[in-house]
Length: 301
Image 1 (cartoon, rainbow, N blue to C red):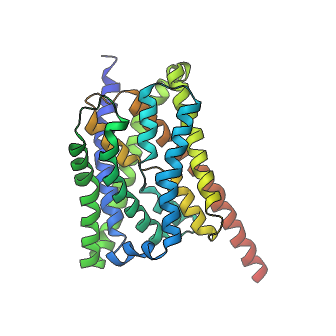
Image 2 (cartoon, helix red, strand yellow):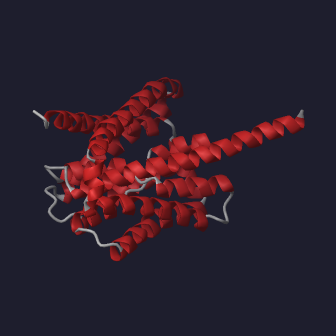
């Protein structure tokens, strides 16, 4: 009986993951048109740096950490999986809060997501040893759960902007509630066993690696974008630091019958600490912008 609450929380979390994936991807599509989607392509320097940071720099950070920090193969696989998962849906929300270009952030997110969907099944056999799913099955899952909802959202937006505007609010609520359910359910499990997790070498390694990985991805990408305007630099940095946990979780759930393994642990740790670190940074940026706005308003008066 003691295991029942934990099992129920896992079930709630698992259902919430699928609801979040579908709703957030559909919501992402509702925010852009085909023209918006092609906008980042015209800015070749920005697009090149986004591709470089997401698919070269961040995976290199993961490989460096694997080489420097002793970890078991499952943790290493989870870290590599997260490192190639670009296009986090949360990037647009961060851009909105920090005063970035939200349309550009959404468009870049979709482009990074499409590339992620294409490369993940190819790299999967080299990353996840012992995975049950065939790369083609993983591709189908990624297309059905991520790409199709995005395309449906874009289709609705292109056909009726008014309908897309009406749908965005309920989809935003569903997305927010489902992500809250994910962090609540898995957070309770994590907090209930945090002593056990941290006391083990595997758990402590997962936590420390997740923190270092996220900080390195944010910092290096921000430094690389020094020639761009501040809002572009922040969009690039948060886009690299916030990995596409949605795609990573789809792969984990499609690849393993038992998701309570160290691959899932690493994905979950990166997700949790990325949210914590990015939330702190966004809060600092938002406060600075608000204070600057008040100061400007006061001097203008």
